[in-house]
Image (tube, rainbow, N blue to C red; front, side, top):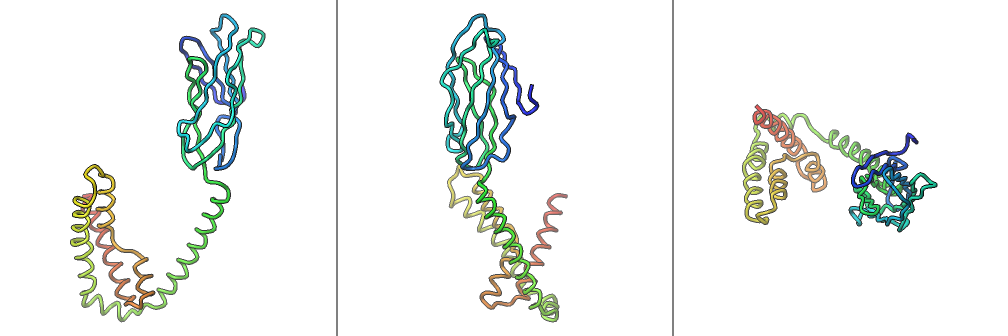
Length: 241
């Protein structure tokens, strides 16, 4: 048997030995078409017969079965072995499977993992590279604008960080909880949890970007981000304990 083939033995009213070749579609991307070869051996056959074939994708929005034979013949001269080819087209990103039925026998499903097209993968790669360089430049620019004396002054009189701490860990979670409880449908448990979790997360570097754009106090923004992140880290440790 070919090492690249996937072998199952299905036992039912008849004994069917099924081989899928290849074992899986490597890097099966959106828009591509692949051919799956299925070899079926009816070990329990007592006479020659013709059986119907049905092949379909479990999720028809993800893949499409382009073509397959409607029937196959189990002949004595071929040792009751039938081979069929199934052409599958990838439509959308996701994970699904091919369901194959021969006569009354349901064969084990063939797994499919569909990836983004080559163009989408390249666009994502280039965008991530650009984004990384952009964030590095902006972060460097923010660092050059910081003044240590002003940061130490904020640390001596932490009025701004204290207000930010109270808003972040008292006011925002309360508002998030009320919005989740009374602003979302009762059966939307996951959405409620997501909204509440978002309301409890401290601000990050993006707040500093907006501070630069609108001419705000960058030293205060950095100080508040640092204190809130540190407080969130300490609170998570206390919760774990």
